[in-house]
Amino acid sequence: MSAEKLQKIKSQEKSIDKLLELMRALRDPDGGCPWDLEQDFKSIAKHTIEEAYEVADAIEREDMSDLKDELGDLLLQVVFHSQMAADEGLFDFADVAGHVADKMIERHPHVFGDVKNITNGNEVIDVWETQKEKQKPRESALDGVTFGIPALMRAQKLQKRAARVGFEWDDVSGAVEKFKEEMAEFEEALAGSDSDHLREEFGDVMFTLVNIGRMLDFDVEETTRAANSKFERRFRGMEKLIKEKYADLKDASLEEKEDAWQAQKKD
Image (cartoon, rainbow, N blue to C red; front, side, top):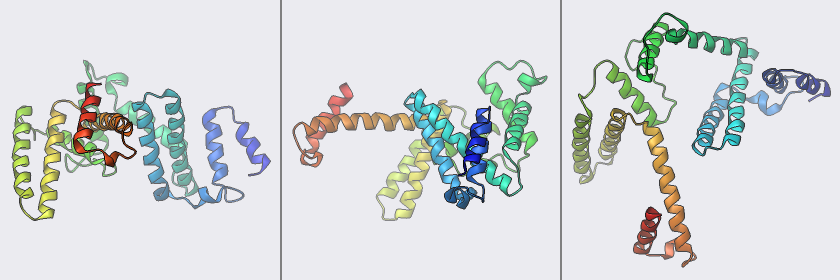
């Protein structure tokens, strides 16, 4: 990169302008970065998803310094996609920022419009979905639930959409009974030899579990992350105890591992 381009980047007074100018320089066919120039929307998409997960991880760890860094990396992804679009004459970063600002104003009529008496988050969600429907009419209540999110999260979103149009149990006990029914079908499939059927029944069990969590107002993705963290914490503690006696975890008996595990649970 030429000294002139670098100086142009550094001379920008606003941080966002500096970032935009940086990306323009990286994507400049005349002296830009070969790797950045080779990328397209599809090749960058995986990095965008990864950066979003790293933001979530920093929040989970309550590491604000890391969160600042990861938010910057995620913002860079938005700038990257916007620059690629600008290169093709489709839209630019200003279009992206302006569009989302206009959209947020339209979806908050209780703040910027004449909708009154909104007192809690659930009512806000109802207003949001109503405004969203006006902006993007749906053929199905399930339209717009993206395939690109984790499966547990998508299951919960699909169930929420179905519930909004009345496809819902009267209370959580109905969902629990459905779970028991699906578990019985899974156990029946487990006794058989059809692996495809067993996989299908396992999926049904997972889906009904998500439904129970949703009806209890749990974020199933969040509760699963918490369970993962708890397992990892206890396993590492168990590992540490076992390695005080054995060089390799495999050398300990299952009973010894269980005792160490229970010790971690008490701690």
